[in-house]
Length: 328
Image 1 (tube, rainbow, N blue to C red):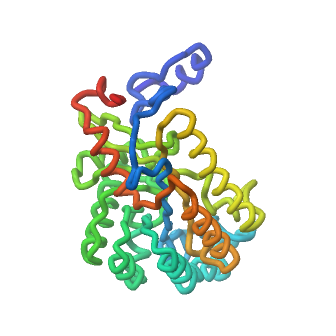
Image 2 (spheres, rainbow, N blue to C red):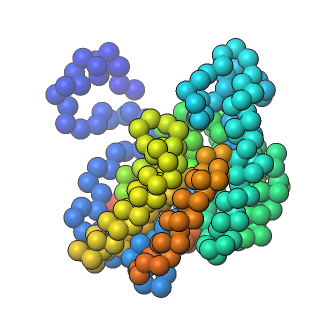
């Protein structure tokens, strides 16, 4: 392990990463100017994946003995040292009302989605798990609870993954993918060692899936996005209202279609939403406006994340070595 004092002292002249630092190697170059030629279902140029982050009831709360309340809230207030009942009720809006408004919207437009589901959230509201199964949607493991995995040791994180998978199995769900709230330097290695996962989505650095190698084993990464994500309604500089959300999502599709027109290459697009945020009426209305618009565009298809992964694998097969991983 590098000496952190020496690292800090000499960091200014480095042009590479320090050998031995834990975690996956950085992959900065990527595909370069020309990504692989992928054809999505129906010949689409843009595959849109809508993700519901279902976390309600698994977030940090004094009620569950965490000693703090989660900070992702509509207003910049923080109750310290005790339960925050207002914040808890915002989360409960998502599980009581918002999730069902979103499902009705997806039923109306007949589109498949992906759910990043925290195991405890689904365990506490099993009707949501039943709806995921009934609709044929995809579950991606979102942890046992909605907590930052980098706060836990390797063994603790391994146990958290196993607890989550046991809960999912009890609910009749089998995730092919995994997405932490915030992964640790051990997460991807643990997923590969586990062997039950087709891919993970703890990455924001591309518009297409890509193969990486972890401990000599090939592993698929299907990138996610925080740029087209409803957390921007309530965190930092972002959406003032649904019109902003609709504008960003439409422009994202338009640019990806322009990219495809310019180089003949298809891309994927992730839209992240939360029942407690987009599940509110005006924001759901904005989401519906976008979906209706997108369904009217040539070259656009809505797919589950697992569909994107499997269609990618069919066209860019699992590489035999790291040298082959960007093979087009």
